Length: 70
Image (cartoon, rainbow, N blue to C red; front, side, top):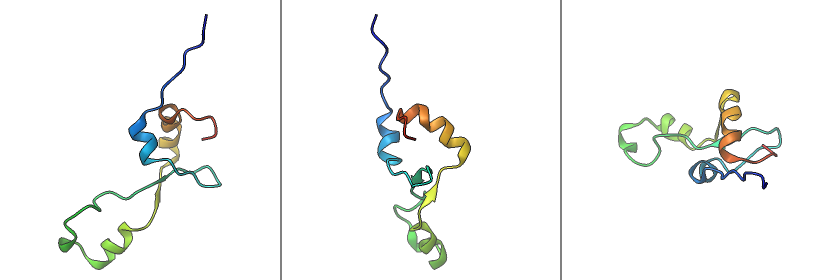
């Protein structure tokens, strides 16, 4: 009997493909596609920074991305 091969969730792996040396997953900030005229310069500046997934989300994301290295 063959083993079951799990497919990774492609939408998740496209969004969170980058991993740091410490094992954290990088993510982009939300609300950064349009409507910048309503936002302050500080909000626009902070939207360019990289954010990381929380540790509780990383546990769940390992099942979605299906990599042993993460």
